Image (cartoon, rainbow, N blue to C red; front, side, top):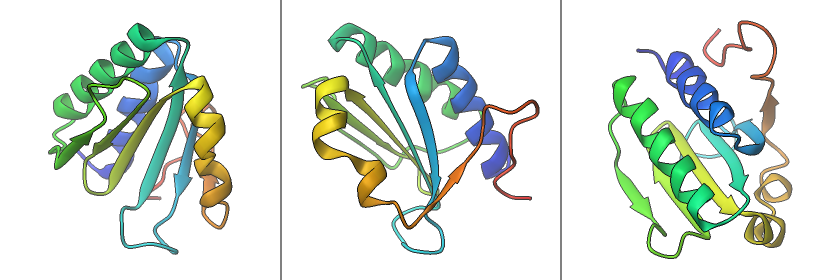
Length: 122
């Protein structure tokens, strides 16, 4: 699958698990860390863990290879590094504290909520 298809799959999975305020940021022009950051938060630790599991499952099914997982034990900020795509799942408090959207504001917000979703590779 393409990066765009992988992003659509993980976005859909997070949406179905009621991920809060899912944001996709295209950082490909401003960083070599990844091409896209996907940021969401859960209501509590079990919700964060559930979001992480569904994101991993969706990306694995989409053929993405996980390079690293950080923060799984704490359940407050979990980072899933899939190379071109990095998924950040936060507790609400930690998302507000770290404010990745502000840090990566030079990136382009990708509208994934529209029908057919905005394709990142197109």
